[in-house]
Length: 123
Image (cartoon, rainbow, N blue to C red):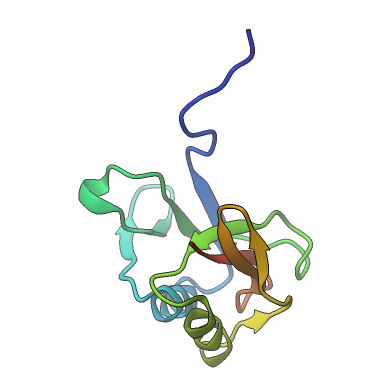
């Protein structure tokens, strides 16, 4: 029998060179409030979910892949996709594709200020 979990993705981590700058970018693009947490290993910033029960991840001080060459994390837009893409540009990121329609919704590939590949997704 093959493994078929309810959610194959259980966590994501995005390496950034400047945690505060990255928090500002992601907060502006996704109209959210990442929570900075200081733990023994290092500080990081958590993506919020209701009651901390959803599938999320965090930003952490690390070395991003060479611009646009790492894996792509797709993140949910809080509103109209085109509005979120304008915020990507205004917050220091880059939109690198046209809007792509798939059965589940629409998205565009973008780069954050560190060159991490992200997909901004909207249903």
